[in-house]
Length: 351
Image (cartoon, rainbow, N blue to C red; front, top):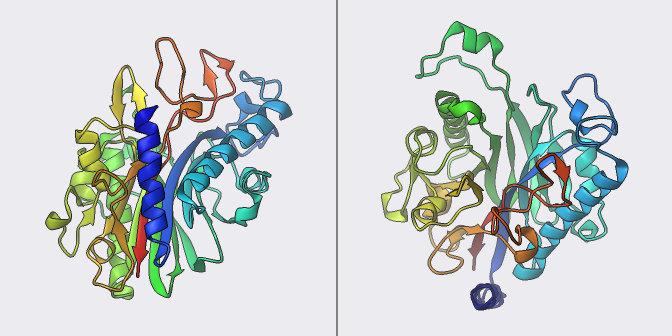
């Protein structure tokens, strides 16, 4: 409890001290299967129907929405402001996001939505929520997961069968500065597979970001998502050029604040007693090393430039999984939880 109070106090000091600055919170949250209760023949949503395996009723759906909104509101209350940008994953469609942003706990945020229906076999997409008072939307793109031009070898069988989430790119301005946000949910680790596929996803997003930097010199880029890899894995360290320290960041590199954090034992999800940070946010050199007077990434607490947000109400309280994220289902039963991932965020600011 003392540690939680200390962190809250540090954040309060940070945001209070930034009162004369323009400060923005940018985050990511895996919403863990935010499905509605209606059958969509184009999606594999059978288990999330009233008669499906999860007996997914209107009451459960509404509880799930309220829980997601509670977490977002909790972050707002601690930071003194809503996220300017919040990337999300594991959502079924735009309708569930419209229901989410209309929740009483966060309706005053006036979140706007960027979403495309994607080809994922499980029927989940990524999306982005933004505050129009702080972020001026210019354009967006749904970038398909293809194998064209890859430096990675894949079999023809893999290429023919594979379907996954597209990568979302959203372009706009904050305080007059150009930004591009990439939201991704890289291929699963189920069965110990997919390492090359995750690297390919990172390769696609990274290369696209280089085209944006060439088109808009000085543009500041944020890549976020459920990477299904840790910051030290090839997808992030090699193919996305993620670096641990600001001193290591070159012109074509990204700063990954969660690399130091995972080395220090901090995680956003836990599996078989092993904590990982799959929920990462990386920033390009223009944002990591911005000159004075420009928006730049800021340390939040204890010198960390990223935050894994977890509160007691979001955690399993006892038993084998004590301290783990309190998820929606456990052993096939609805336990009225939140998500199997904790959200993450960074803070950017300028005078």
